[in-house]
Length: 281
Image 1 (cartoon, rainbow, N blue to C red):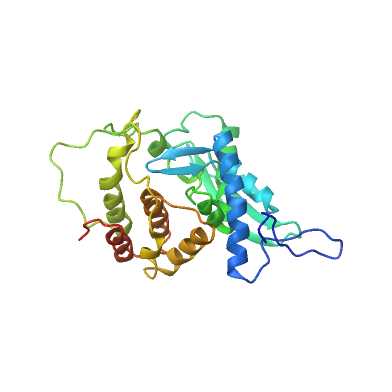
Image 2: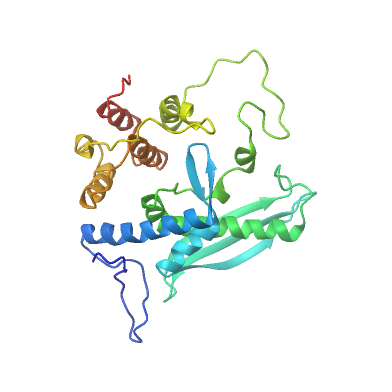
């Protein structure tokens, strides 16, 4: 299939039920990529995302739009207030299901008046945010890979910490004291943190406002990256089949997502950087 339509199974009433029901990986990726491209246009036009760090994280409205495109819908299972002294806290659970009520994902989330940006907020707003977080989390499980194909982070914006979203570079987060002048010896970085340092060293000079990006705009020869990681190979195959040139920055962003999802090791990430011509130890 190449017209962007989903191949689905129908019940005896002729009603479409589920996600992509193909066995050929090439067809699955082709259909999902067509949907992802259409979704990317919608998210960009309606501004349904938030730039956090060096990634674009999609709001719940973008996730529910993706769900509607492939007939996966969030259903609230419960939303209850927890019994805690001097705190308004709600826990919600949402399930993601197809039209035949087949469950394909679940999400549980909390929202509390003790969170930095929820102090003093009305109870209904705290309850609503717990539902919103649970919704985006439930949809992420079955749909995160398609959102990644659309060029956005698989982590919903609502799952990011509020103080991370509002933090100004160079200033402490709201309610926190500045770090002391003398810093203790740093702990050993995790694989994800180390990879982030590699990426930041290459790209944070690009994030200055009002300066056009002049680096990494030419297409990368994706053939040079084959064989490093099977998940990366699948992404490369999709883009080669679609004749879609990818920039170095796009390649690194995709690899960083794989690393965060533990689908790529730090050594494999470094191998990608070396293949792109960078001096990485």
